[in-house]
Picture 1 (tube, rainbow, N blue to C red):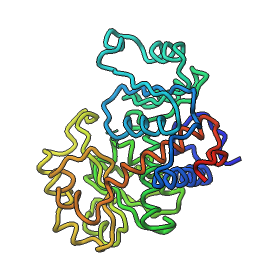
Picture 2 (tube, helix red, strand yellow):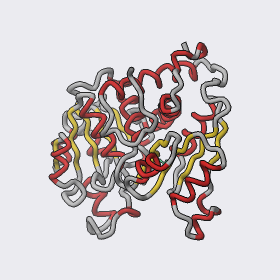
Picture 3 (tube, protein in one colour):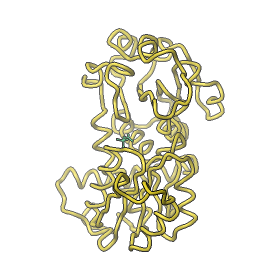
Length: 314
Ligand code: CP
């Protein structure tokens, strides 16, 4: 049995085989999407609720498209007009959504551990769409899926993650997936945002951008997350850009074949210049597109539906 989880909460807890199974399932869905295959019936009759209590563009829409593609009904919770604004708790909100007939909840929340909390409370699958600075597992899965499409096996490949590592759930999920897949990961940025204790996760910690970029095959930029920073971690955005922003000069230190990634949203001109974000080495929009197939895989696996059993995606 390659997958027997009802929830996707973290990549830290997934085995290498489970990560590979999600990728293989996503690849089958992507082939079907590429053939213009018709809507599938895997989640027909089920209702997926996107419970997003933090802003999102890519993740929410990709989950919505993935669930619809699998035949589910989808409801996207509107936090701004909901009773959470009157103080209703996450627990009460989720239990009411369940009482209304939801069959699966996709949760984004500012509190680390909130998906785990709901998974223990509810009798339906819970999928983590980003919990505070903890994890963003589907982002890590789609990022590694995209890297493998471009590079093949990630074993021994050098991946540099550059920027706000400390506050990044994307960095944590990618680190867990990449190290299991055998990549050599270096995290780079100012010492305040890239503390030495990240070495405990099996990565190299560097504050030397030029040295780190020299033999990188992948460079993943991360957004400076103003909303999570309680104290100033560097003097100014301009100073950060001056030291660590990826511009043409710094990109010239890279192998010409290196791919450039970013989970979005991009702060153009801060962590990356537009000419690189939109340039030939960028796979940023491929990441977004792959988010649909990867989330189709996650939703169907957590629902206990065997995609291999669906003749439409053979
Ligand atoms: N990558 C990502 O999580 O983007 P959104 O916040 O737009 O979902």
